[in-house]
Amino acid sequence: MRHAAWALLFALQASCAHTPASSEPAPAPASPPAASVPPASPPPAPQVAPRRWADELLYFVVVDRFADGDATNNAAVDPSAQGAFHGGDLKGLRQQLDELSSLGVTALWITPVVKNIDSFVTGAGFPDWGYHGYWADDFHKLDPRFGSEEDLRALVDEAHRRGIRVLLDVVYNHAGYNSHYLTNPQTKGWLRSEDRGTCGQDDVTQCVSGLPDFKTEQPEVAKYLLDAQLDWAKRSGVDGFRLDTVKHVDHPFWKEHRRRTREEIGKDFFLLGEVWGGDAESLDPWFSGDEMDAGFDFGFQGSTLAFVQGRGRVIAFDKYLLSRGKVRPGYLLAHFLSSHDVPGALHQLEGDVKRFRLAAVLQLTTSGIPTLYYGEEVARPGGDWPANRSDMPWGSRNVKPGAGKPRDEELRKHYQKLISIRRAHPALSRGTHQGLSTEGDLYVFLRHDTESGDAVLVAINRGQQPAKLSLPWPAPFAGKAAEDLLNGGRLEGPTLELTVEPLAARILGRTG
Image 1 (tube, one colour):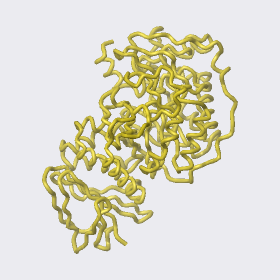
Image 2 (image 1 turned 90 degrees about the vertical axis):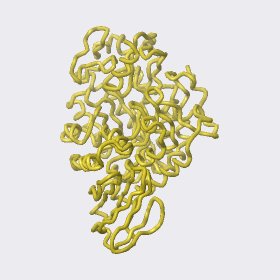
Image 3 (image 1 turned 180 degrees about the horizontal axis):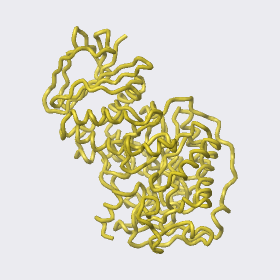
């Protein structure tokens, strides 16, 4: 398959993989999968104090591309090759947790850590390895290139000590290319594959991006996969799972998954699902069946970037934000500006940091779970695939593999400020949304949380000229005064007189 066609298939179908034109086979283990199950151990003691997931700030890390804390596990590492392992590991991530906690992060999502295939594939036009963790070869082993099981437990423990929850990315839909599951006599009947011509055409039976597809509708297969992944949760102490390729596994599986996580791990074990293209409406079949707690809102990135670039009417964007409130009560949307599967927001904005800062304001003043993709807060370029999975920039710090890569510390301060405002104001994470002004390039909206009484007004000027507005004080601002939480200063008077500079924002909170 030509690279352009392959890239299109990736963008439309997968969150994890690439279709190979050719590959080098990985050796099959001598023993069947169940023989490698390690003994269970109790979860670590540190726990995060109860907190609503609606109030969390989630930070997503591709482990291999973040920080290298142990050079002894650097097998086949080549930071200069875009498809190779770059050396990031669990120990390195644990050593840099203060980078996250000082930013204001309250939850961490890490890519899968199970043993991946030992070979590379070449369908992208270059050697492409399973550095991302989505090409499993043994669900019962931790990939030694990421460290040890002790490193995983230590990461979770240290995160919990900082009040940071941890979500582990898990895959039930597929194995890696040429995985031993395809050749092992005990498991080869568990999968559909392209080389056998057994892939189907519907969501559940297709082989996403040509990956071997587990027949999760078969009880034996489902039990094997559930036993393996739930065992990781029990032994590591993670707080929940990020569920990959949700729509490619049937609903009975997810119902059983929910039942078992609650019974075997805990009733508060959190499940965040990736339904490709998901929004409040299309995610509802999984919410109505209580199969997961939250899902990704894939419309947020495109809608927000279009708004800050001046495309479309402001009132249309307001209607989109209002529609996000239609998610089924008790369930959540997670919204992102960049991810490992789509071109990064800053790249799409052609490096325009001013407009990117406006996008960040919108992300952090919108209900749901804001999901930051590692390094975007310091202007990691994050281009199209595979550049959207580049190394975390560390500037002058000697943290490999991204040591010496430039970072924007002023942008990081902007994120710190926005995150601190969000964490201090429940109206931003779970309040109602009301558009107050949608004319021209100035957008003003109110967030109000009736439970706490908190209210915040957000004003964003996407235009090239200063924008002025005079309006009655919103009812929650009964004191006829407000504090500018983002820029400092105080506004008061019989009416709200507001001026917003070009490509700038103001966030107003009640005084007193």
